[in-house]
Image (cartoon, rainbow, N blue to C red):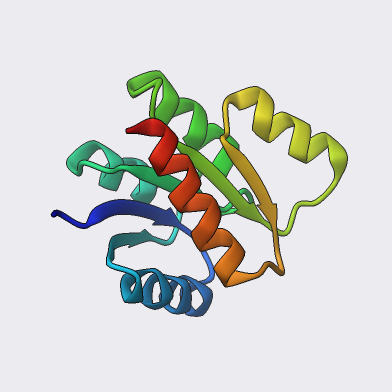
Amino acid sequence: MDNKQILLVEDDQNFGDVLSSYLELYQYDVTLANDGVKGWNAFKDGKFDICILDVMMPEKDGFTLAKEILHADPSMPLIFLTAKSLKADVLEGFRIGADDYITKPFNSEELLLRINAILKRKR
C-alpha cells in the first residue's frame, strides 16, 4: 500500500522538520514548503492526499494558499495548523473550506488521529 502524501506548508523550519519527521514515523510521505508560494508550487507539481497549512507565512498566507488549492482541487482535504486562535480566524478557516483548524501548541497524537479520520472519510 502506498504511503499517503502530505503537503505541509510551515514557515518555522525547525517546527516543520520535527512535524515532518513525526508524520513520517507513521508512514506518511511529507513534502515541506516554508512559505505560501513554495507551497503552491509544490502543490502544482505533486499529488497529495491532504494539505496542512500554517496561516501566518511570508510571501503568501495560508488562507490565500488554501483558496488557491481548493480552486484547483475542491475535494482536497485541508487542515490549518496555526497560532492564530481568534474566533474570527477559526471561522475564516472553516469558511474557506478547511476540514479542521488546530491551534498551536497542539498534541501530535491528536493531529495524527485527525489526519487519519479526515483521510478515512475522503476515501
